[in-house]
Image (cartoon, rainbow, N blue to C red):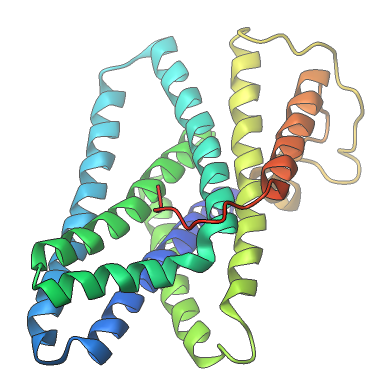
Length: 282
């Protein structure tokens, strides 16, 4: 498994699992509480899911179209910006889930209850569409950031990684339900959050490497240390670790400072007080 394959599969797995859980929450509530309206409710639910996926595909198409309009340094700047944006969005998502994740299920169920009680099928459609589109849009931006950071990509390998991510997400959803009492799903997502934070750090490091390569940012020094004898970051296991965590075997001062500032910001955001009131998901 290459480093890029692991990154793509992980992003698709994590975001798809969350999207499947959202749909599962709504589907489960409708099955138990919608009564005679369940058939109609399900049609609007799945129409919303399809619309959400369609919205994510439109975003992907727009990003790829915009990239075709750029060349040379402008394309480099765009890819650097998208990698940095993906990292910041990952950080924002993890912080939001850390603070508000426990209120997600009740919030979705309340939204479904209001829609079904009032016969507001458009409201149920929008509830599903917005939830799925949010996860889909995050997946699109994260994947573009990962692929833009890669030295070389091939369509078959990327599609294989996406398929592996989807398959793992489906298996994870099944496992969560089967082993829910023995293995709480909150533990599952906490592990995913940690891995996402490392991936965001890796994207930031890649964006910084490219800005230094374009001489937009000075490296501030030569290599501060060299641990390539222990774990080389150019291939094999070291390349996988580097792509998933931002590890550098020969870091310059700018890289060390940026990585340290990133993790200080992460810890500060995660330790900040949680708001007393559950807010709507961004």
